[in-house]
Each structure stands twice: as C-alpha cells, then as structure tokens.
Length: 537
Image 1: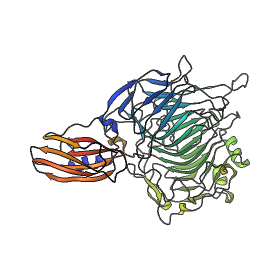
Image 2 (image 1 turned 60 degrees about the horizontal axis):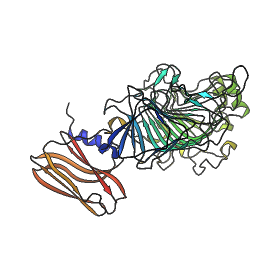
Image 3 (image 1 turned 60 degrees about the vertical axis):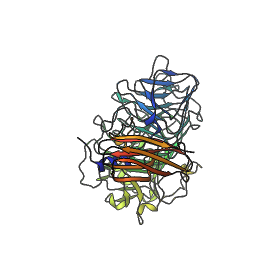
C-alpha cells in the first residue's frame, strides 16, 4: 500500500542516515587474524561467526554500518586474543543492525557483539576448586577454543567500544544458552565501553559474565529478556544507564526483568563475588499505569538472587509489575551485612513494590533512604513511555531531581560522576542527543531508489565549503520535499516543501556555517525517495 507523503516525511525525519546508503557491501566471514580496518564508505555484512583473534585488532571507523546475516546468525566475536577499536562519535556513531528491510526487522535477526577478555571470573573446577576459564554462551565456541574467557588480569584491555548502536540482535542457541545484544565475558578494566545503545535484542540487552570492565552511558530499548544481567563474578562499575521496555517483546521462556543478578548459575560462594556497583539508572518497565495490561512474563525491576553482592544507588525504577525481589537467604544476608547495598533509589508505579518479606522490611528502612511513589506519573519524567521518542528527563519539580547521595564507600572511585543531585540516569542534560535511535524499524539502511520523472540531478560543488547548488528537473508537477539532514537524520535546512512545477530548478545550500562532515540531501515524493551525499570541508 502506497504511503502518504506526510507518512514518508515523518518516517524520514526519524531515520538515521549513514554514508553507507551510497556504499557497496563487503561480506565478512571466518577469522580475522591480522589488523583490519572497516571504513564508513562500505557496508559490512557479518556472515556466520566472525572471530577477531591471534593478536589482531579490528578498527571500525565512525559512521560505519555493519549488518548481521539472518540465516547464518551473523555475529562478531572479539576473542580474548583479539581487540576491538570501535570509536564512533556523538553524531556519527557506528551501527550494527539487521539485514532485514524496513518494517520487517525483529529481535534475533542476527547474533550480536561478543567481547571476551582475560579478567577474573568465578568459575571453579568442581573436583579441585581451582579457577577455570569460562565458555561463553551462544554456541560460538569452536575447536580452537575461541569462545573461552577469563583469567587473572583485572586490567586486561580488550580495546575501545564507544558511540555504538546494536539493533535487533540476540539469538537463542539453546534455552539458557543465548547470544545477547552485547555480551562481555571476562572483560577487564583496561577496556573502554561507553555510549552504547542495544535495541530490540532477542535475549538480554547487556550481560556481563565476570570481569572488571567499567561502563557509562548505556541504553537498552525493547529487549526481550533482561536489560542488564550480571553474573560469574562481575565486579565493574556502571553509571548512567537507561532501560526502556516494549510491552510487545518479552521472554516467553523465562522472566523479563530490568536488573537480573547472580553470583553464578547455582548461587555458590565462589569468588570473586558478583559485586558490581550501579549508580544513576532509570529502568522504565512496560506499564505506564497500574492498570496497563502486560504479559505475565514481565516480572521485576530488580531481581537480585543466587548470592549476588551487587549494589544499586541513585536509581529510578518505574512501571514494573514488581519493584524488586531480593531472593534467597544468601543474597538477603549480603544486604543485611552490608556487602551489598541498595540506597537512595526511587520506585514509581509498580503494582507491588516488594516481592518478599525481607524486601518489604529491609529496602524501605530509614537508613537506606529509598522512596516509593504510587504511580509512574508521580516521578514526573517528560515522556519515558514514548518508545519512538523516549524522553526520560525529569520535569521541573520532579521528586527525583533531588535525593542522590555519593557518600557510600562503593562510590568513592573517581569513575563516578558525583556532581548531580538527581536520582536516575538524567538530570537536566540529555546525554542521548544525536547518537541514539529510538525508531530503528524505520531506518533506511539499504540503498535509496530514484524518483520517477526526476532527471538531471546534480550537486556542485561537492565537496563544498561555502555554497553548493542542487539542480534538478522534473517533467511533471509533483509534491516534493527537499531537505538537508545530518548523518543522524536531523534536519539542517528545508529547501522545498509542496508543489514543484515541471521544469528545471536550482536550490542553494549554505555550507559555510556547517560543521565539517557528511550530510544527506533527501528528495521525497509521493512515489519514492532519492538521496545525495553532501561533503562539507
């Protein structure tokens, strides 16, 4: 069915355009064993399990588009002998996404990104009790042992991974043996991970299997299982995290939670303990009101169990059926004795705040300074449930603009930004601006087709550093919108909006005041779209 011009224009406004819409596709498979660079003038298609190993570093240029093949379960694995150097920029992020077309993308369209390292984990040999390496989930291990992780180097460096989006990943290889959106196995504190968005993962959005890596500015959108899952002795620090759930997607084989945390799979006393420290997290569940119906698989904002020792501070949990569940005597003892902590947090609009008797006594105790609001709207966030345009910033007068505290010894590290008084991931500044995408289903990552009856299309000069002229001809009258957008689809200028009479036309594009980089000229008619790349020097 033909879309209306208004619908097309609205969709394009939400798009994230990449240089790759003008690029050729390079299929990548097998092992990467020498230093390799992927550049933003190509599309890269992951076919099957792709391993970076043998001391090789994979460098990915900002703005590069990588797709995962669905049939072969395309997956990128940075093994413990390899390294990643993927440094996107604020308005030119690196994008991993589905190879499916617009409106046909689903969680689990491809594998995801796995980074493995040599930092400590808590797996032990059952007979001797000696430490052993782990085998990462998802069926990616092979005869060469490329799925192994863990070791003794707490400061191990797997590279840099920042300003990256991962869309529609997450494949269930077997029950409880899945590839997540971003999987981190034994990744060390020498690794840089920040400004990552995982959208519509078929399993957890993020899962840490041990390791010591510290992470900042993480977004989980519409995942099916858990937003943030920690186990096998993960002891890193994480600040400024957002999880937003889509009621259409959930884990029908288990339970969908915001946080899920275990010491290990059976809750042993193996060390190092899962003792990660989280601060300034906003977990938006699927229920914008208490009466909003959701699938029974949606469970808890926080599920802490199996002898976990994690600590959570300055966090907002809203719209979940159950606020928190500290399950089992061992985990409950960890909180009672202070090896785990849960302070200065706010729960809002959860049908049941506490899942267990212990929770209902311990979590609200005066010394923990936690608070509870009866409705999600009482938290006064701008628009946290708008899935295609999430805005979780507190409104003026919001109760979560105050109440944070950084006096806990767990927060003494210089890693934590302690300047804000707000609870949750946001104060008055939106750190998601430019690099995130909350409508990946609509993004035109494939080549853009031409508009019938439009001819003699040219752009000169290009590159430009002053004025560039777009020239077009049409042999009939047509409704057309012509606009210049940046590489994240945000409007720079509008050159035409309405009826364009038949004949030749010229449009001047002022480039002198634009930042250097790549832009896209969109020409949108009722029939089709056509685009040109504009380079500003």
